[in-house]
Every structure is written in C-alpha cells, then in structure tokens.
Amino acid sequence: MKVDFHIHVTPDDLIRDYKSIYDKEAYWALLADSPLNKFANGEAVITDLDKSGFDVGVVTGFSFRDIGLCRYVNDYTIELVKKYPDRIVGFMAISPKEKGFETEFNRCIEAGLSGVGEMFLSGQGIDPHKKEDLAGLMGLAKEADVPVVIHSNEPVGHDYVGKVEVTPKEICMIAQDFPENKLVFAHFGGGLPFYELMKELGSSLSNVYYDTAAGIYLYKPEVFRVFREICILHKVLFGSDFPLLSIGRYKAYFEKSGLSDDELGLVLGKNACRLLNL
Image (cartoon, rainbow, N blue to C red):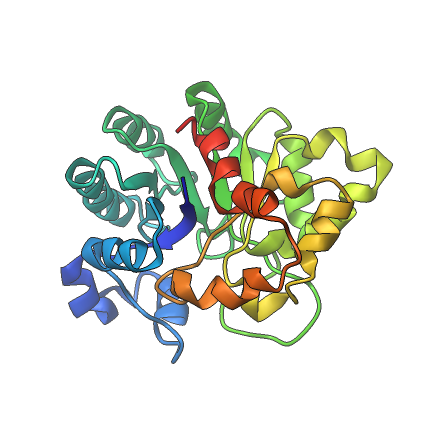
C-alpha cells in the first residue's frame, strides 16, 4: 500500500474567501499570501492519489490558532473520511492553548480522525521551551494512541515563507519532554534525523518519525542512503506536501535515491501503515 502522509485540504468556501480571516490569523495570512501557495479540496486530493497510483492520503486542515476555525476545517476533514473511507485518513487541526481544545480533540477522535497536525507552533502561539504549552494535548494523544505531526525546519540555508524558529533543537526538546508520544516531525525534522547518531538521544527519539514533505526543495536524493546507513529508514514517511507539490514531482527524486524496491516500499507506505495501524 502506498501512502502520502502529508496533505493539506481546505474547504471550498475558505478557498474562495481565503483573505477573510487575515486579521485574526497572522500565520495563515503569511502562508496564503506567498506566491507559491496553493489550495486544494478533497476531490483534488483523490485526483492526485489516483494519478500517482497511491492508495491512501493522510489529510488535514490548516492548524489555526482559533479553535473555532480548527473545528470548521475538522468538520470538512471528517466528511472526507466518511466519503472516502478507504482512501483518506484524517488528522485534526487543534490549538492546545485555546479554551475547549480537549472537547474538540475528543470529538474528532470519536468522529474517526486518526491523528493531530500538522501543527504550526509559531503560528499557534506555542512555545516549545514551555512543556506546559503542549502537555495537555500530548496527554490526550498518548491516551488515544494517535501521532502528532509538528512543522519543523532547518536552522541553516536561505529564508523562506514559513521558516521559523522550530529547528532540531526545539523539536528534540519536545521529543524529550514527551518520549511516550508518537511524534512525526515534518520536512525531514529540520535535520534532526542526523542527530540520531548521538548516543544520548537514541532512547528519547525512539517514537519519532520524519516525513519528507517538500523534500525535493531541501535535500539531495542521496539523503535516503544516509538514513539507511544510520539505520533509521524505518522511521521515514513519504509526504508530498500537496498541493504545494504533487506526488508525481517526487518520481525522479526517489529513482535517484539509491534505495532498493523493498527499502522504497518502507518509505512509500509500509512505515506509515505500521504507524497508523492500517
């Protein structure tokens, strides 16, 4: 089974009127105003999965700061899961510093959603240095046995829209604060996978996974050989970051990776199936 672990969906009316919430959601405005930004509804997701021969897509709405907006996009994700139960796995948008987030979390789990994120810590007012900012959410996620996906980026290289101070240092702190949670750090974990070689980090990163979202912009395809060499290929999840990038854009990338068919099978689906109990 082939799985795209990192897909963003947006309800049609919000696509049409995406500027209407700029005044209350600064991070949404920052990303939405980028010339690279794209929106996609559920049907566009299914089309990309079909075109690329993928079986399942893990989708989420935008992680807003406002819990009401999180609820709004979660409703859309819930309906997609109902409409395409064999094709769509839904993750919830949640804002863990907002009043009532616990109720929304439980509602989403009961409605069939299977995880949390992609969370935008900077945009949601979450300080990764303050354990209490995430403790409530992580407790619920641990109890429900669902993964939490967190946006991360590398501390070096050029600046780009969405590049914030959520680097390997910050997300490693989160992993150490919540070692029993299933965590997925997006965008190759901002480079954290390379620190898996540090002896002192091994146990605290045992439940950590990394997705490849926007990977073709970040690393040469040889990066997968490095992951194989340091024995963490079982922790890597293919994610396209659709609609920013379609699944098909990664075809040549993986052809140059140097991985065997069996090894590619891990990245392109088996690891995700294990994590999600598919």
